[in-house]
Amino acid sequence: MRFRNIEFRWCKFNEKYELVKWYENNIGGVNCYTLALFEKGKEGWDMRTIGDRFFEDKNAWVVAKSAMSFLQGTFDIEKQEEELK
Image (cartoon, rainbow, N blue to C red; front, side, top):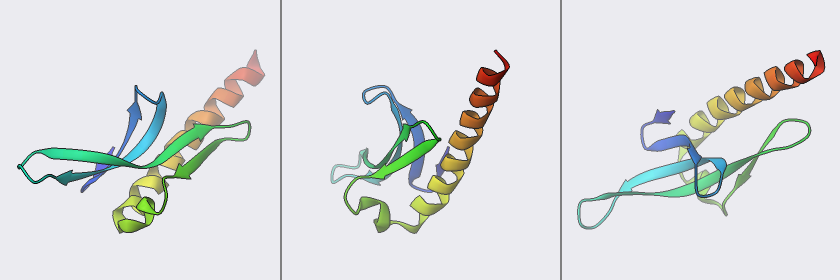
């Protein structure tokens, strides 16, 4: 899921969902850096920000809110499936 320059995605390296910000570097290429990580807990998903990076861009709020809704929805479905076993 991506909105403007903020993306919510699965990171294979960290094996976690993350929120990243894309930017154009000095040589015309495109890079990104992590704003926040999402971790699954006993009661749902938690978001851990990296320093104050998350607060640099208003668009991060928009994507994070959608991401948390998505993750919590999957958590609730998994919980219901587990209760049916």
